[in-house]
Image (cartoon, rainbow, N blue to C red):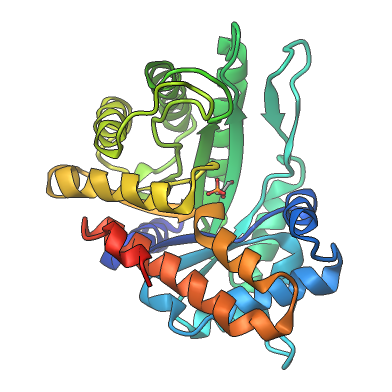
Length: 340
Ligand code: 13P
């Protein structure tokens, strides 16, 4: 058992007010984002973009760990350095996405189940040998008319716990991600109810399957109103609801909670994380941090636009977003940081 190593890695991922950078977009997701900006959807452009990210100067000031996609962990920078080595040289802990994406759940219209357990033990051992120290699995819960069903919540929770137990067996810290999607017109109250239920069921399964809570990280959604809900609460209200929900459902033994951004704008994600830490930072059993994908990368990807000449400006944009979220962890973020 890797008890000591797991606890140490999990704590390092949320130490010193730093957070995790999710750069593990699968082929379809990465290509979709490239297509929107007119960037060619080829292996070389994906490689160049990931090189831009990992070579961003001083990224390690605000970023503790980076989640890679299988393609990226096998790639090198132009000068022949493995991406994973560039990260470790920068003091950033490398992680890997290990789920195989979502599929429609049989007999449950509109609901999803995540695949990827087959052969997972062998893949985890391979990633561990390559130098990965943590792994991520994303389960998706959709809010809609009559959904989520209890069946969907239970199968996803069961699967998350099976993945988490396998990770710990291989010495990798599991980043357990049950994402309640923001899509839809539901209220923040509805998001609260669903998130609370999902987290209770997830932690019940983690307990039943013997996952060591001290050696994992939870990556949840914030409790927010649906994207098209007419009532959009203030950042302080989102902070109160999110912390109340987490206090009810997340055991104190978990070292850190690293939120996904889920389609919020970069500024809003920072403002909401900041509001939580302003009010609650000194009062909580776990660290409240970030594991953003879009909210860290989006401005940088837009500036880069597939052109080498934009590289430095894009890296500055990524560095800036990482700094904003580092500040948000300290409760020191404000909009003046956005006026450059
Ligand atoms: P977003 O922050 O863009 O939601 O991505 C985080 C992530 O890793 C989703 O699995």
